Length: 101
Image (tube, rainbow, N blue to C red; front, side, top):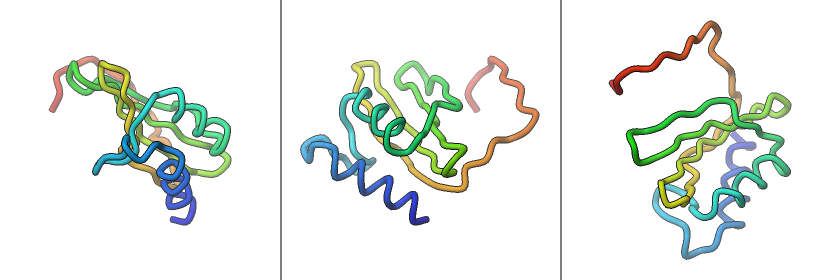
């Protein structure tokens, strides 16, 4: 829990106040990517398109167990949707194309 709170606090403090929304801090994708890689050692581990409107990415760190979910709109605006800790990968997942449930 402490790691997730620290991640959220740093990202909130680092993002411009005007760019923060009820869903979390928002801004340029590269800003968040740099923070996740340099500060939290997170790397992209999964992602996909949420309809035609948004790219959803899950970033995680094997070293710390922290994870972050980013959502990017077609205009390039990225928001932090969630942060957490104790990330684990599901075993045996095979990706398939299909309709959203």
